[in-house]
Image (cartoon, helix red, strand yellow):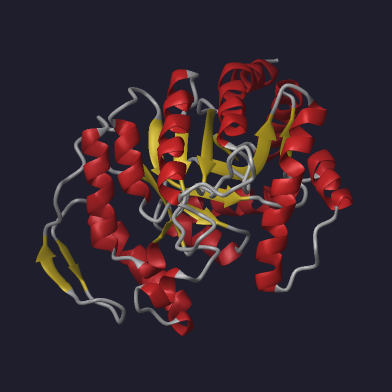
Length: 344
């Protein structure tokens, strides 16, 4: 690898439970989320990402606002979304919110743009699901134009046109660091390359090696478009505890409940314990002691040759104290061990 590996965390702000199993109010979940991000900064994590959702099992609907709260209490960690649902937002406002975050954080803002894996934002903001593809394509095109920080002239079908319009505030230190989140579509990989955006692969199941062709495709597409190499990252779920057994037992009831709840909405078969264990052993669940998780992350980085790995540390109603321990172990033990393994 020619770039230094970044090791980050991200979360959707899952609504967690108290010691009695009662779900916490969303407001408390958000306050806890800020504390988790502050701890991540203190223990050396490179990036923290908050995902945007508009449903009752996730507390974060406005990532930039929560990230601004984190910016005021941290000094070094980079701050971004995971993801921003660009299809149902306005590209100009997205840029303005993140350029503002970049200013108040001293140049630490990033944005990961995506179409979103849930659809609640479309009716909420008055968009038709039938326009799913066109919305993302047009809005990504406009965002790319705005990001260049020159007066923009643009027209399309999904938004009012712009004519020589400047967008404020500009980013102080150059271009806003921008990623496109991709779930496994070759077309999406090529699209990210066409705009020169970094590629974030959401690998939430199966062997990570399945995504090697996408990394290769992205590199070849950049070459075809005559664009310099851009970073590639991986986002995958996991949980760190003192031992392998403790990590599995802590995560299992919450992860399975979450997956089965979403599965009922989407027609998936119920998840059994055997599938959970299979994903830990051979798939894309990074669960266990710091050594176990570090070994697995290092293996994925070697296989895919990526520049960043983000562990999705929030999974279901797993409690705040367990999440804080996971964040601390990730920063103090997993990250140094991954770097040591890769140096060897």
